[in-house]
Length: 175
Ligand SMILES: [Zn+2]
Image (cartoon, rainbow, N blue to C red; front, top):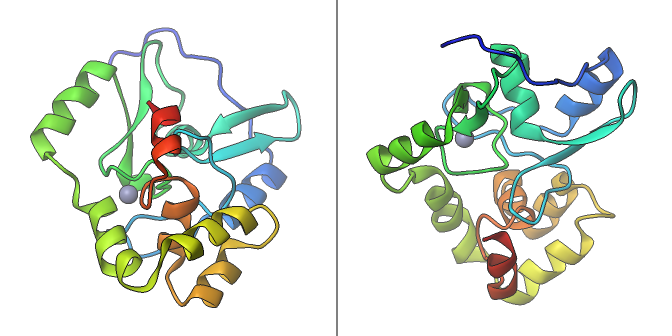
């Protein structure tokens, strides 16, 4: 990878790092690791650094920088899975938008988000319950919501981040 001018990057303090990873459900090496914090409307996890330069970041970008180092100019953090809230370092890599498009074509529809929806989501959940989860996500932890609804934290994270059970309106905003 050509190391051109590195983009400005966050300096994560130990406290930031501790807080960051406390919001990640670290699962098996090959599984998606759902972000359990807030999400942007487009489905990416959201994390604010509190020390130094205060800024709100896309969480997968922070995972990418922690794993692969600073992003070169014109590079972004991309996923090998299609779950935008995924924080598994093995599912995040630095690349260009052109690479992203090619990878998406090559892998076709990723199994990850489909699994989350089909294995856990549809069977047990209904629209009123999904809306209840979204309404309470800011005040109740995703672990508690998962326990209350008898589904995995992956499912809750995917709902909160609009990866499954997409509201028609939310989908329009995400585009
Ligand atoms: Zn993943």
